Length: 227
Image (cartoon, rainbow, N blue to C red):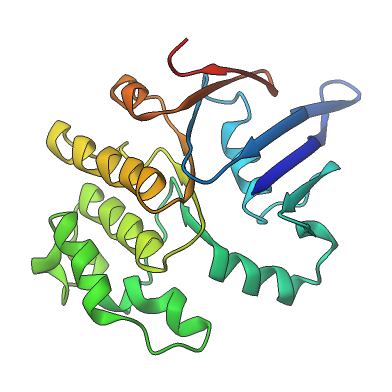
C-alpha cells in the first residue's frame, strides 16, 4: 500500500568545509495492510526523518514514495495535503495540539479541515478507549504530557486512516497506558486492515510488531518479528 523506493535525505553541513551528510540513505520499504512495522534505532539514526518522508511531510532528496499508484511528491502541495488528511494518521513525537480548542475539538479538527462535520460519537469512543473521555472539554494547557500524547493518538485514529505513522507514541506513558496504546495500534492493523509504522525505543512494543526494522546511520535493516 505504501512503498518507498531508494529514499534518501541529504543535508549540507560545514565542518571546516562543506560536507554532504545523509540522514536517510537508499531506503526501500513497503508497508502493507494488517502489518505493524516497528522502526528502532539510536537517536539521530534517521527514524523520524524517514517517517516524515513517508507521511508526505518532508520532500526527499532522492527516491520516491508511492501510495498504491500515486507518487506522493509528484502531487501539487494542496493535493498532497488533502490526500495526507484522508489517508494518513500521523502521531508526531512533539506537541501538536491547538491550544484554543478543547480536547474533543482537537480530535475532530482533521475531519473538519476536509469539509466534514466530524463524527463526535466515534471521537468520544477513541477518547474513552484511551482513558481521557472525561477531558473532552479541557484545553491542552490543562493536560499532562501523557494526556496530550493520548489525545494525539485519538485524533489520528478517529480519522479512520488507511495508514498510521506513529513517532514514539508511548514515550510519555506509564506501563498501563503503554500497553493500551500498543494494543489499539495492533488491533487497528490486524482487525481493521490498517498499515502501521511505529517508531519506538520501547522494548515493550516488540511483541506487538509483525516486522522489525532498525535504522543505523541512515540505513535500514529489517527482519521478521518472529525471527
